[in-house]
Image 1 (cartoon, rainbow, N blue to C red):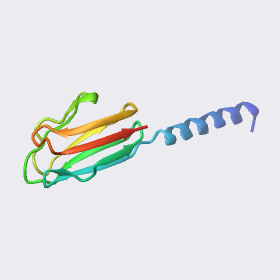
Image 2 (image 1 turned 30 degrees about the horizontal axis):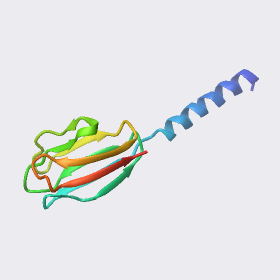
Image 3 (image 1 turned 90 degrees about the vertical axis):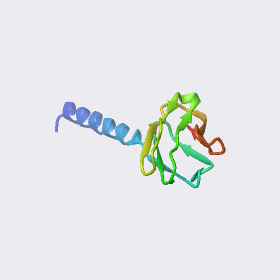
Image 4 (image 1 turned 90 degrees about the horizontal axis):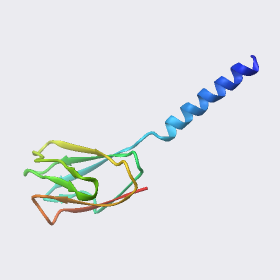
Length: 106
């Protein structure tokens, strides 16, 4: 194999390795009994958080620092958010103020 082909192959492998390193994870947060399933969730930037309404009532997920508002979330429905920056974010339900969750993203 020529030197040029080896360099191109190495560049392709490095690109693929970078893509794998950037792969995101999904984190599912349940909502039942007017509570989140977690109090604190640690994620990496690029991860997705799925808010699953397992409750018998509607919810409205609000994360002010991320300007996220799920709108009315019916029972059995999901709302998804990709975390695009590092920080600590307070999650609340606009309908049930006692529902609290903190997302820590690095």
